[in-house]
Image (tube, rainbow, N blue to C red):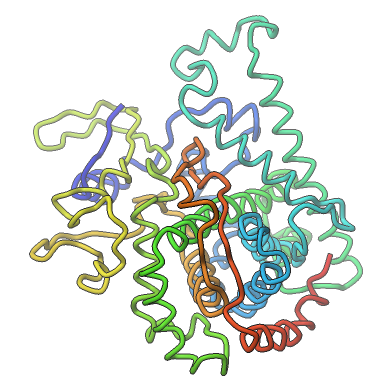
Length: 447
């Protein structure tokens, strides 16, 4: 195993040598037992590229992503409305928000509530629970090291205590995939479309223009939902945790918001981002402070690599130590502190005098395996956070919440308490008007 603990090493090995480091190391449990080879995250670089070119090529371009901003805006207003009604629902509302946008974008239907099973039979809470368990099983040590010692796979089934649970998780995800696909198929047959990308893929598949097995095609929609749900929701929960812990930074951000919106005259939106540098810096700092994927997803090199007189043998597992890179004392001033102003002083938050190629988005991967949903995620984070700053005051319940995170290569804060209240009666009136204005969207995308 090779761990890259500097931005320079990630650039030199994963990006400049992307043609050699675009593979994934074996992950038998997730890739074969759970997803039966259908998950693009663990596919070979060639197969992943092939599948994406056939069905994803038009999905997450800048133009396509930004065309869904009205959906992002409507769902962010729904979050404000739901949290104003039930303030303690804020934590799970981040999951509902991310899941609803991704389901709308993928299948053409939203998720009205976090815990209820809708008319199609889909339940986001159950889906999310299964997704989180799969993430946990992907972690080294969560199952026996079958990739290192393949003979373990030949042991009698009763000696493979992990297998039954892994197979059940796979079945659960395929059941959800079938529910979502069948609902889309029924609507398409009845001429009801919402412009979702899988609707277009379905049409092309039925015309014979997509040469993939149906099971593989319909599983791809579930993969996109899984990716959009877990990463975006955990990032939003981190932003809220930072908001509760750092009231001075929130006060500065709210002052900026109030200037742009003239108080309660209107709600802010993503289009205001250039006028909200501190609010944008707050989001960037939260992602640096507690990165969603602190070790990203591992790579594998297809050939031997020589780097600074060191040999990286062929088929090595290569991990980008995102946490260490984003907390490097050589790059960041007081990196363990939450200081949004660092991004006002430098676009990448770096120390004065530091000059090197650097990205803020290492959690989204590197080289040929960069997550193509980064722009969609960024839009969702900024849109909702701007609106929550405008609408709510953030306070603590029973003292500062602990900074505790879940296990897995995608990490999220453990549920925490907070006092989140509407800022004034005038804000409540303006929010009600904004919520009512989205009625057409809610009706159109209702399951």
